[in-house]
Length: 90
View: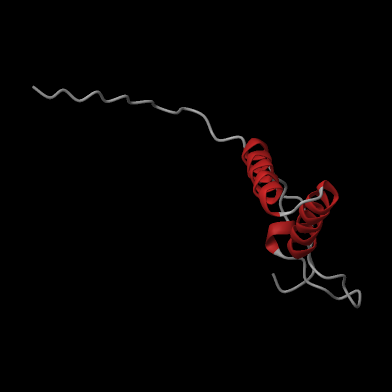
């Protein structure tokens, strides 16, 4: 006779993005710890990666007063309108 045990869990909350990113960083540090010998090298590499992600996420500095603000920078994290007026095409 074979019996299967099934455990079902209903999640009713959104994931904590900060916790997920922290776990990813900790796992990355652990991975580096097995391949890179110095702590300074590990922390330097993770710090550099974080800086690169921040730079990649930001738009380039405008070269004149006539520039377009990307849509993702026109609203807040709560999806509220941040940009009240834009005289551009959008």
